[in-house]
Amino acid sequence: MTTTALTGLPVGRGLLYLIVAGTAWGTAGAAASLLFAAGDLGPLALSFWRCAGGLLLLLAVRALTPRRARPVLPRRTRLLRGAVTGAALALFQTAYFAAVESTGLAVGTVVTLGAGPVLIALGARRVLGERLGRAGGAAVAGALAGLAVLVLGDGGGTVRPAGVALAVLSAAGYAVMTLLTRWWGRDGGADPAATLWTFAFAALAVLPLALLEGLTAHTARPGYVLALLVYVAAVPTALAYALYFAGAAVIRSATVSVIMLLEPVSAAVLAVTLLGERLSWATLAGTVVLLAAVAGLAAAESRGTDSPAAGGS
Image (cartoon, rainbow, N blue to C red; front, side):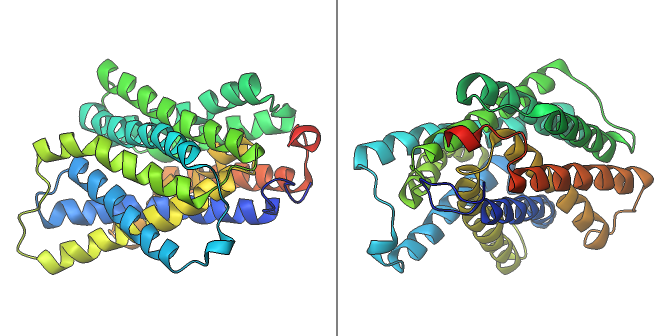
């Protein structure tokens, strides 16, 4: 299977979209670290500006796109799908930030990104009828092992039940977003307009909490902060999520969840090269295992191995 009949997007291109999106997501963490160091902008305010800025950029791109190139869905359908995925996106981001604040970056990250593929695999099997197969199951297990080594190998962090619960809640939001995108993609429902509504509803959902935290940053380097905000809105948000939603519509959900584990790999590379953090054995070993799992699943997906989509999508 090389092309999905309903969306017309080749599977190979969908895989490439997801790889680029996962890598771009990883740069958001480094940009956020630089932002937090430059001023007092909080994570919820950053989440709001990320969604709102991404929405504005996507609207600008849409204005330059010929109307004939746009897939058309009924307005009510676009609104409904945007509201549901926007709520899932807001839950995913907000619960993750709260988990990190509660139980630390290492534990919050490994629980959120570790629980995500498990919940997605279970949901895809039950709701979409997608089977991983033995090779796929082994690749997911390997990816989770690599994630644990990558994130926790340097000493881990304090495990707090409330923070773990928030991380699982974040993973649930991510799972819902991924499964719905795949489900609608099977029906030929990959519509850029729905992505716009997703960002609009996500920004509205985060706005009340962001207002309580404070939307503006007090900083001696306003130009620097603004440039970082523009980058976060453009690359790991507008570009990455547009590619993510397009790719997730044509690739098996469990494969999507594992490929997106490239995010911590990208973040680890940037932490070493840009932020001056040391390259540890855990970073190196976890990265190698994760990349091997991603490469194995991508190869299987491109060949159609163990894929129920050959008979149903």
